[in-house]
Amino acid sequence: MLKRLLIANRGEIARRIIRTARRMGVETVAVYSDADAAAPFVAEADRAVHIGPAPARESYLDPAKVLAAARESGADSIHAGYGFLSENADFAERVIAAGLIWVGPPPSAIRAMGLKDAAKRLMSEAGVPVTPGYQGEDQAEARLQAEADRIGYPVLIKAVAGGGGKGMRKVEVSAEFAAALASCRREAAASFGDDRVLIETYVTRPRHVEVQVFADRHGNAVHLFERDCSLQRRHQKVIEEAPAPGMDPAVREAVCAAAVRAAQAVAYEGAGTIEFIADASEGLRADRIWFMEMNTRLQVEHPVTEAITGQDLVEWQLRVASGEPLPKTQGELAINGHAMEARLYAENPATGFLPSIGRLERFRLPDGVRVDSAVEEGGEVTPFYDPMIAKLISHAPTREGAAASLAAACEQVEVWPVKTNAAFLARCLAEPDFVAGHVDTGFIGARLDALALDPPASPEVLVAAATLRLASEPGDPTEPWRGLEGFRLNAPPCMEVRLQDEAGAHVVQARSIRTHGRPAAIRTDEGLVVFVGGAAYAFTDPSSAAGGADAASDGAVISPMPGRIVQVSAKAGDAVAKGAPLLTLEAMKMEHVLVAPFDGVVVELDVRAGDQVGEGATLVRLECA
Image 1 (cartoon, rainbow, N blue to C red):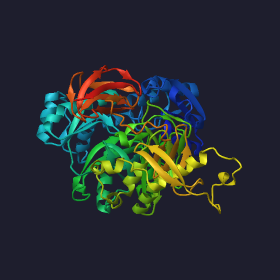
Image 2: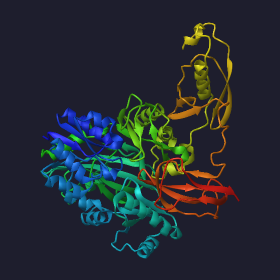
Image 3: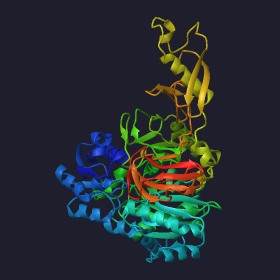
Image 4: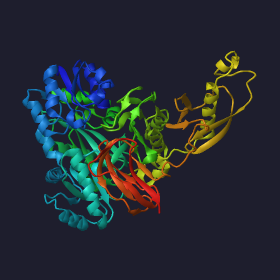
């Protein structure tokens, strides 16, 4: 068994690996950047080594620094989690060449499956069905355009080295192809250092089904059943579940057997995921499910597989890396109940899901479900890494029970002032079509406005805010009812309270005792915040509020976070329509298009492609036409 394991990753996956390693008696070594010096995973590891500045390329993505940390700490093995260096075959080879144990598949398998075009050719040869498309070497724009036209629209452009929804664009018509290709290549180059792409036919009612596989060096290979990851936004997974809804035993056997063949075709070892795209227009059918790609690592959504099988997949990884055979045979594995996972992101659904950064003055997560968290109250969400801050995982005897439990958990999330998608997740999980199992990858897009936007503050929320405000007002300290938070016989009369939020001013009748309803409420320097349904409603005193003016009324387009300008789509003097793209900002590993807030004329635009900009900087200013 391994003795001292260096974890070449951060956040919730580092904490997850530490938890299993500690139970198995394996010492752990964390590596951390300047931005993560106070992060929970650093404190929880047995040892920690600083490896550089906040930018990932100068710390977590620097193989030399990671290997130096392994030497300094006396580690005998390295686990790279997911993301960062986990699917870097060159890094795996350097780990092995340094005499360390690589907790992962052989570098040859990573290479074979790391490039989507080559992987599809290999899978086709192994008898695994693949999605129709173009995976050729000719990357000329004209050739790619011609292939897309031949396949027929809509098509999907995907980065050859991609993953995590990055470097992926859906194209509806031929005229939009060139712009989408350019954007896809920029994002792919920034995320993976490789701007090559492939093109696939776009399945109009797609389901994303993946199979967890495991293999050891003794020739054993098994699957741990399937997961459904169809609930996505912009090709990024939002809610995952296991098993897949509507999957009958015959189709399960066919798909899982194909996944095992895929792993055996590359002499695989360790944990891997075979991802399939299914045409669900006629339900899940074995002849309408095609190989997409293989992720040669542990997946973010591995907890749902752990829940339904009762297995610890990190323990399996460590045992396989130590040379042991797989802990279970295929016949010893079975599905127990249903599990779901929701990814809690620091992002604001109301602003197109732009990432949100800052100090977590309030960070309360629910009880009753498994919580894998990257941060704790008082910590900082920085602009340098992926905005996922926690995962919430439910397990129940039925799918309906798992969905209800997870929805209730998301509604209990309390985070401030950083914005999160908790209320959005709760609404997704409670949506009738989702509960009924009618899901595909377009599910969220078709209902985006209803799912993304919090409803206006309800009377319950307003009363909770007004009550807290009354309780916080100065008064006669000898007044006996002021210190009470429960029932009082001669309760004071209702009082009129004025509040201000984004929607405007409110007049509320409330008593100066605290209510005990579903909302939770806190005081802040700016006013009050009420938490309900996973959403956070902020209120101020109208006498000090700005009056709820439209933030875009002066025509200023503000940078929502620190980042780099990668494209300028307008210039001073241009007449633009509301919603027209003005700039593209790259931040937190993603591109964000900033658009015109109204019909007008660009009167100021002083940034260029390549410029670094800070949060709150005015990038463009418009005047009404």
